[in-house]
Length: 141
Image (tube, rainbow, N blue to C red; front, side, top):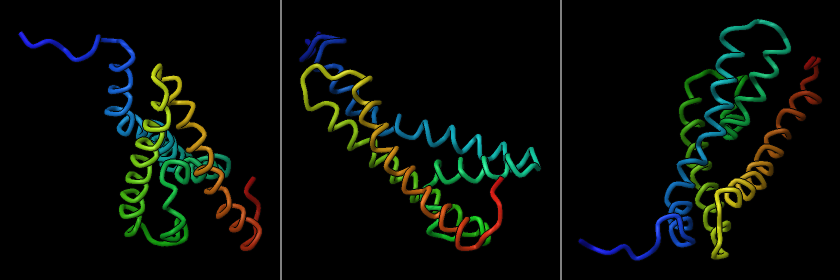
């Protein structure tokens, strides 16, 4: 029987787990925002749920403003969703590498690093919404 190179649930094991699974786990928060967006947009018809659906959709797929959503047709949305998925995986890779720089890395370190990176992206998605609000006009609420 082959011996393992490291102790299960030891420091090296956690680092390896975070580096291998972190990029895939990075897709979970955007997926939750995407489900919220789909629910708000398809199930409800109030102005508040429309805004919540748009904000959630932008948080799930930050590349949507690049294709002109919500003002463009839906033909380009799959492209934006694919680009956003690649972006989120890249954020997961960066977060897993940054959080495992010290030997005693944990999943808490990973999610803390991921949260900082995601907050920057989500802050960047607020800019197109603010531009649309003030340049085009109209009330959001």
